[in-house]
Amino acid sequence: MDKKKEKEIPGASNGIGTSSFKEKLFGTDGVRGVANQLPMTSEVAMAIGRATAFLFCRKDNKGLPKNMKVVIGKDTRLSGYMLENALSAGFCSMGARVFLVGPLPTPGIAFITRSMRADAGVVISASHNAFHYNGIKIFDRNGFKLPDQKEHEIEQAMYSEELEKYRPTMEFVGKASRIDDALGRYIVYIKNTFPEELTLDGIRVVLDCANGAAYKLAPIVFEELGAEVFPIHCSPNGRNINDACGAVYPQAMSKAVHQHRAEIGIALDGDADRLILADETGDIVDGDQILAICALHMLKENMLRDKTVVITPMSNMGLEVAIRKAGGKVVKAPVGDRYIVESMRQHNLNLGGEQSGHIIFLDHSTTGDALVAALKVLAIMKKTGKKLSELKQQMNQYPQVLENVFVRSKEDLKQFPKIVGAIKKVEEALGENGRVLVRYSGTEPLARVMVEGEDFQKIREYVQEIAHTIRAQLG
Image (cartoon, rainbow, N blue to C red):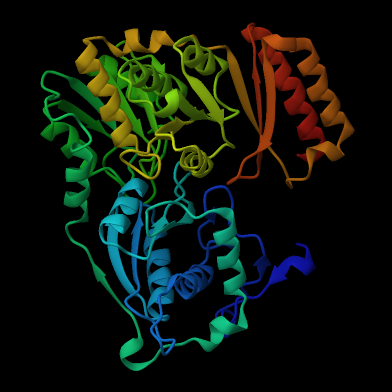
């Protein structure tokens, strides 16, 4: 570890243990890591709570905290209890009023934050990762994830001597309480995004909740709208979240569609902000195809603002071709739903998403919401009378191969001539009939190698060549 970048959280090593870590905490989607190891320790979580309260707190004319409210929710990971208590303690130590909602999807926590006029919302989740990981994501009062600059300010506040001086006492110490009806509030909100004149009567739905945050509420939403629901992976035990199930492993959903002769399969990830579908034949429908279905329908109905969709460099070339062919346009944002939302707000657009299944309908939600996206597709199926297998054919997918390569450290790839050479060689071979994208994961020690082209066998070989070179240099 670079000693120059090490910092000490004030007060975190007084008999509790050392809490030194690199200054950069926040990645592309909050803070993330193995639970109970730096940076995902209770000491760091408490410091994040204190620093966030310090920055977000409204103060009266005496400089004392004034009516600060924060909503804290989580998914179903075992470590969620530990981090929830630590964050709550951090906020309360700064005089904040904390509202705990328990297991709730990430978009649900954003919704509750907005509806309660809270000053901030916090999600304890590592999204699609395995149970031993966890993470912390922060929303502002409007339910939007914080921009890079605000996250940087939180990091700086954590190390600030000024923060240590600010310790409310007596009646100014904060308190925490639970919101018992958060699930009910969110269910009503989700159902209101589905057209009032439609029902899901007669539709058989396989619903894979990934043993995650939506395990209790998601079946209720679809059942109350009239669907016959076959739920799977809805029994979380703290350790089975995303375990060979959900949006990252949709094979179980696909198999269940065949078993139950369902019209659609719906797979969520651990915090229910990602959606992957299966059509009535069991074939997987990914985020790009979902985005194409929704964008083309919204274009036809004149509902797509400025006829433009926000996508990412990871999006399949077929998506852009389909949208342009229908008279639409695309704007490209960096990978990650936070950056997609920032681009949507900047350009005043209402639809964006990425291949992994983050689909954002900004008219309804401030972040990716798998349940909203699933209901949008179901509404299109009902309105058009078409099966999902027909709707997905509106986009012709280009063959695409992705391989994740473990790396010891995320060094600038341009510093390695062999890696640069391997990428350039493939790009020249593809010409205008394909593309190469190599980037680091924002949440894991991985380099992601993606090659897209017309010949599947060739692009698979190209991916292996680049991955082998990266592994030899950085593995």
